[in-house]
Amino acid sequence: MRQHPYFLTGNEVSTIMMTNNLNQDLIEASEQGNRDAVRRLLVEGANVEYKDANGRTALMAATQRNQIEVTQVLLEAGSDVNARDITLLTPFICSGANGFHEILSLMLNYGADLKSVNRFGGTALLPSSEKGYLKTVQRCLDAGIPVNHANDLGWSALLESVILGNGGRLYSDVIQLLVEAGADVNLPDRDGKSSLQHAIELKQAKVVEILKKEFVESNETIRQAKALARADQYEEAIKLIDIALESDPENLDLIYYKGYFLQELKRFEEALEQYQKALAIHPNDLDFYFYTANCLRLMKKPEEALAEYDKAVSLAPNETFYLYHKSNYLRELGRHEDAVAAMDQLLAMQPNRYDFSFHKANSLRSLGRHEEAIEAIENAINNDPTNPLYHTHKQKSLELLAKE
Image (cartoon, rainbow, N blue to C red; front, side, top):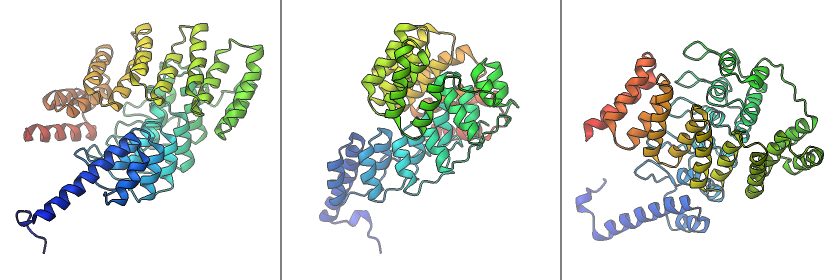
C-alpha cells in the first residue's frame, strides 16, 4: 500500500526533493544544450519523461531551442516524441512548427505520430508550410504526412502557404513542393475559397501559374541548383550559382538561392552577406528582410531578427505579411505582450480576420488575461459561429477564469 505523504520519513522526503531537483536540472540543461550535463543527470536518475509546470519534458525544452545534440541523447534515452504539454503541443509537432528539420528528421526514427495534430488541428506539415520552412516541408512530405489534411480553421498546408505567405521566392518553392506532392488546389476553406482563388485575389502571379501547373523555371541554372538542393547537395548547387553570378552579378534570384543554400549549410554569416547584397542592389525588395530575419532567428539573435521584420513593416505598413510573421516569432519567443500588440495592429487593418483574433486570444490566455481572451475569441466566433475550435478555446478560458 502506498504510504500517505504525511507519514514519509525524513530520508524519503530528501530522496523526493533530490529527484525533483534532478528532473528540473535535466530540463534546464536540455534547454541550454548542455549535452554532458544531460547525460550525467540521466545516469544519476533524472526521469526523462518528467514534466515541468507547463507540461514540458526535457525533450520539448531541447526542441524549442533547436538543441540537436541534446535531442539525440534524450531520444536514445527513450523520451517520447509524442508527449503533450499543457497546450497539447508535442516535441514532434514543435519541431515542424519551428522549422527545425534536423530534429524532425531524428524524431521520425523514434515513433513520431505522422497524423498527430496540435491544438488547432494541424499536423506538423501545416505550420511549416505557413511559415515557409521549405526543408521541413520537404521532410514532412517525404515522411508521408497527409498533404491535404485541413486543420480546425479549415485550412490545408497549401491554403496556409498561399493565404499566410506572400507569393515570393521562398513561398513559391513551398507551394511547388506541395503541389508536386498532390495538394488539392481546389480544396475549399470554410468560406468556400480554394487556394487558386486566394492566389488570384492576392495577385500572386507565379503561385497562380504553379497551382495551374503552368509554371516552368526559365532559368536553367536555378532549376538544376534546386534539384541538387532537394538532394541536400548544397555545395554543388552553390558552385552552379557562382558560375552564373559571374556573368549576371545583380540577378536577385541567383543571389537569393546562394544565400538560402548557404543558410542550409549553417554558413549564416555568408548567407546574410548575400541577402544584404541583394538589398543594396534593390532596397525595396522586402522579401530579403524576411530572409535576413529567418537567418538571424536560426543564429539565435532574436533582437536583430525582430529589427529586420520591423524594417519591412516600416516600408510596407499596409501589408500584413511581415507583421504577421513577426507576431509568430514573438509567440515563439514567449513574448506574448508584444504578440498581442502586433495582433491589435493586424486587426486594425483587417478586423474580420478571425484567425488574427484567435491568435490574440491564445496569447492573452498565456498571459492570464482570460477576460480579454474571451472577448478576442468571441470576435472569431462572430465571424465563424459554427467552428467548434473557437468554442472549445472560449470554454477553456472560461474555466481558467473561474479558477482565479
